[in-house]
Length: 97
Image 1 (cartoon, rainbow, N blue to C red):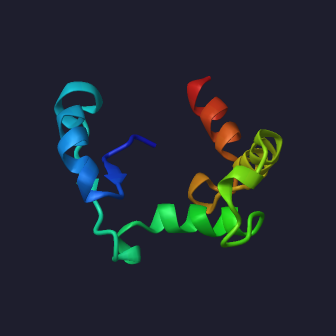
Image 2: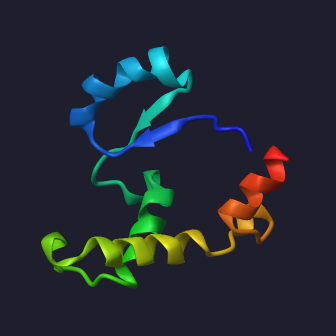
């Protein structure tokens, strides 16, 4: 799978990130409107997965680094339909070998 673009969620960052499009990424950068959840499906899906482990209104300072690591591992170990039901790691190693 070849990346075709990058999405960011903050118009404030547009001025800072736009130069990266030409300099570093060589990918078009798309900025979603903050009030339009449908423009950022991947982000919203990721938030939903995180919210299964960390309830809304939980202070970020109360979540330990160890808890974050466990959540990250749990999310990254989930098979993805877009990867033919492989985990991201399985897909990565299959495609580099």
